Length: 321
Image 1: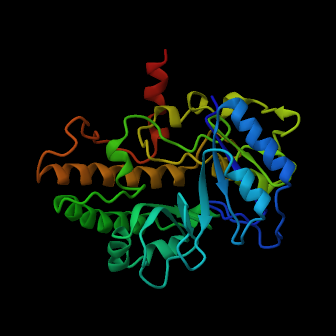
Image 2 (image 1 turned 90 degrees about the horizontal axis):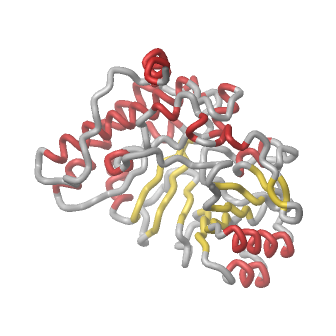
């Protein structure tokens, strides 16, 4: 069931996920009528709107249309504090410490940038943001990841987060703290709970599908939605993910399709990365609870002996007999 609509306000609207904007893509502002029709569609379907902005000031009439409805603003960091923004996106690690208080903040980092993320800068960043989301970009081929090094970095940051929680602080970091609080999948939901309206007035599964192939649309603001094989985007039809408890995993359908040619089947590397996060979260939760009574209503994350749930396929098949 749809709950959200992402509206890209320009062809150069900031990426906030794994995909990158093609370098050849020029600025193209969404037509005002398409914007208004998208807002009307959201109102009729009772959808929350997430507007994604470019790095320039929009025309007054576009701003007036945006402000006519409750929404979430996702804006790129452009060197100064963005007023009234709900989400700020950094496309690299800031060279200087953040000076202002920021809302939900996204760092889009290459694998190497993540590995080089300085400990002191991470610590100072958490003092300035309400929540930090790390998104790894430029991961094609994802096989280039050094997953052992990724695991080491997670453990390094976990030690610091443990200390912060013991000091009475509660830093939120998507890849480590989310899993501690979740009891079910909390994925992106593209094609199921979320769709995207692009600047050309057409709907797409998510922004990444639009930037990869503009012909890959699922309808438009005038004719409505037309999602072929919609069940494939649902968790219950994902043969691996529906048996998985790495609940913090984004379950990126675009990456799935790029890596396995199936939107509902993740690659081995994606599963391993998500389970390294899950297991580090498990250890973090156990360690925090050594210092006191922490979220007692939440069960411990169980110990597992695998990093890819596909290994357990024979067990699933037996359970489904």
